[in-house]
Image (cartoon, rainbow, N blue to C red):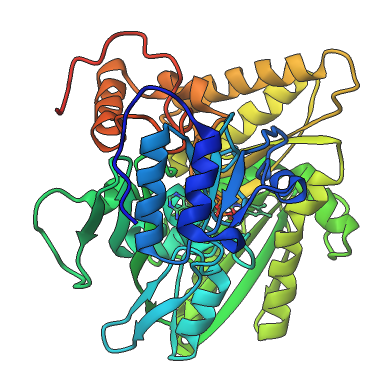
Length: 479
Ligand SMILES: Cc1cc2nc3c(=O)[nH]c(=O)nc-3n(C[C@H](O)[C@H](O)[C@H](O)COP(=O)(O)OP(=O)(O)OC[C@H]3O[C@@H](n4cnc5c(N)ncnc54)[C@H](O)[C@@H]3O)c2cc1C
């Protein structure tokens, strides 16, 4: 179905609904209140009820949806599983959600090329399971892998504990099919594992949070699955001692698969969940090694030596698959356990160069005291990437205001340590006003110019990722 863009300047969400129904049929267009309510938010508390939810089945339907959106000046909000932590998939007023849940097919998996071609709605864990059937695996493993979708991972450049050794989503996406805001069908990159033709639009689209194009297919690199994994868990009498041990592990002549940090409160939550940790433990490190049995035999003593040092209270080891799984299950349960501690949780994911981890941890704690807030931090120490969870009870007078001040001070501290506002969650709605703290005016103007080139009518996920206010007219134009 071809729809000519009228560009009349009139927003027309009602006629959009008619046209979407004509294009997709009633089964793929939902506008009942129960569905609208279900799709009104992601993991963040902010809600906005959309006009409708669209469930395309293929690339051509996505292209035609964009054509209708252009003709009726209707905003589209792409959505995977809605597990994002920054409001990226939260609708904006009068928008339609484009849910990729029905585009959930693995199109091809070639073990010789070590490439899987998948639609965006494939659940990340299913993609990994399909690869493992061939002795391969998909390395990025966000904590949400059991339910988040590969399209959402691509749009946020998701990462996980294994990113220390294996990198992030961006390192695995070889090529993309997508529809931009002008309704153009784009094919970026190549299935070949080496390609240098033109600009790297694949890397531009990965992490662009659905603001430049809707991803309809991805060719993704896989690796041979490691034969074994082993995990070490070390507890410390202070966060400072744990951070010093992180430095020693990072100086070992081999890269662990994962190196995770839990602060005092996270350690207490894990202990409450039944994990045997010394009562005096104020911080915990988890190190995972993977590879062949011989690789692990070489790595483990190196990590053990590095973990041992001032303030270490106890060192535990998990070698069997069941023991390794139990240990990680506890770490994965932390996110939910923190959420249950307060009516509202703000989950930041700042990152600093790993040498600055100790300074970051001490700033997180100092600011929590200054602003009288409960803060639980844990995360990917080897990448200098911590999830800073600020717990709030909105009923408590002044808490929300103090949390806002805490975040401002935290971001300033992170940037002064050479870090970044987001290691893996992205900016979405939640953090866009802070972007100018990190990105300079000219660079921001270039970002807006790129947005203008791919989505001049600002229909794709408007108001996300880039700050709302451009302080100066962009100097650079691409048209
Ligand atoms: C318990 C829990 C643990 C988590 N752990 C991690 C973690 O370890 N690492 C990590 O990185 N994140 C983590 N997250 C955050 C979240 O799961 C990731 O950001 C994930 O990548 C989002 O995937 P999704 O399918 O839910 O996407 P959504 O939340 O639906 O969308 C995320 C963004 O992608 C855009 N988008 C979705 N599909 C498309 C598409 N096809 N084309 C263009 N844009 C699209 C959306 O508009 C939005 O901006 C966690 C979340 C939870 C709840």
